[in-house]
Image (tube, rainbow, N blue to C red; front, side, top):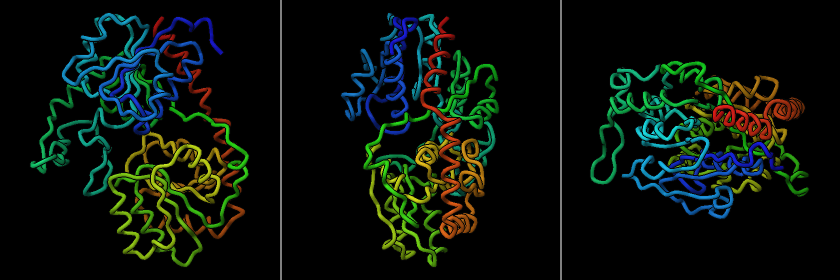
Length: 399
């Protein structure tokens, strides 16, 4: 599969973590492996080694360079023999300008809102309101974003608004920014980035070959699935409240994931007397999750924050499962209401309840939505196309 034109093309990746950790790391490893198959050479510069899935990471990257937290990246990369810097999550934005002196393009993928939002999520943890403003003095007041949760003996800490503005400016100096969705492109435009500087490429997970035992797993009537991080912005608590209003319907829920809000959600489920209908499975492997998608009749994505894209929904639709989701962030770009499932106003518990009950009570509609969803994803969202478009972009920028 090696392409002679890419045989000597070397990409130096900058990413905080080496090893599996979250969604950004999943994208890094899958993309690096796919580019390597196409003849690219990969070098990884990182701050922290998670030690998870080390064998795949060592295979994907021809070499790795550990950069201590107090060391500028350029100090260890000044003699790098690469055609391009491909930056992902990197907390020290001052490194970007220093890397300019090396004389190769600097391209960055923006995975979330952290670069231009002091709270990282554009979502207020107390009011649960999503912010639609660019970074401005409104971040200081009324948002009070500089006041953040502390650690150790200090319950709070103060973050610097001026440092956030410098970070945004550092990113404006990069040669190209890649984002997950048109929604994310709009967020960058709000913050003063140039239209021609932004490229939209959804970082899709690869299609995996599955054993027959998984492919033949039938959907279980009334089986609902929530998959992903259990943090407040993902809205599992809102889903539980909606299900409490649908106790008269025949349903069961599986929660596949863990996170900081897990215990609170389990306590809420107990308070709402739902625990006998919920299975809590924690973090699963891709194969285990694929089996769950196949056994679910409906997958629910109740995100309260503005999802940059929402990969869980795409995965579910690949398995011909309809999705019920809040219409937040980039989610409406991959699901059409009443064609592939249901889009519901963000945070509307009663509308979410009604959408769930509607599909539970109309299995023919549920099946049709799932089949439509599968066709739509196959025609519009391909990991192969994502990699080919990314490969072409990186080589064009290098030239």
